[in-house]
View 1 (tube, rainbow, N blue to C red):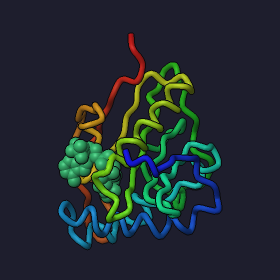
View 2: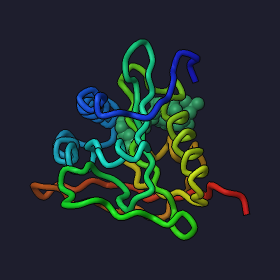
View 3: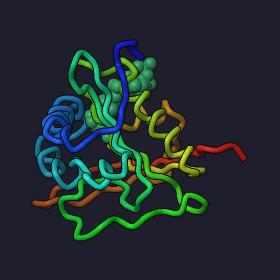
Length: 182
Ligand SMILES: CC(C)(COP(=O)(O)OP(=O)(O)OC[C@H]1O[C@@H](n2cnc3c(N)ncnc32)[C@H](O)[C@@H]1OP(=O)(O)O)[C@@H](O)C(=O)NCCC(=O)NCCS
């Protein structure tokens, strides 16, 4: 990855920048995979900021050139994707000894793609999950994210459609990877 990129946990102060970055990343970098109607329906419920993960310290941002150029999160909680907008209470905690950690959506700023930022965010998320005792990771990837996660060693376990508002659906891919040896 570019030497000038650094990764740190996100704070509440980053939320406005993340809420601007995510739709930009979706509209440009998913355009080859989904229709505008699919992207519009998914922004918010599927591609929203999960503030719970910012509070947990597991939401990561990549900075470069004085701005946020990517974000990605992992989770010690139940939800595999989505923002916290429609969640009534606190998301349930996982048991690292029994449950796989969630590696969650990675969004890179258009113009910064294919420089290793996505791969670096996944590696940082995995090493934090490993340090927290998790032995496996699962995720639900967009079709745009599938090549990145495949390059990071994840195998496809299921393909399915997420139902969204207005009768729209989004094809996604469930993927998994072992984090710990043995
Ligand atoms: C998916 C995404 C995060 C990838 O980020 P990135 O910083 O460009 O990825 P990297 O540069 O780290 O790529 C690492 C490897 O992943 C694979 N890869 C990444 N993007 C790819 C693409 N568009 N086509 C094919 N392979 C790709 C390649 O093997 C790449 O290695 P290489 O560049 O040496 O060939 C970015 O395209 C994005 O933000 N997309 C829109 C949001 C989204 O759908 N995110 C996924 C949600 S699950």
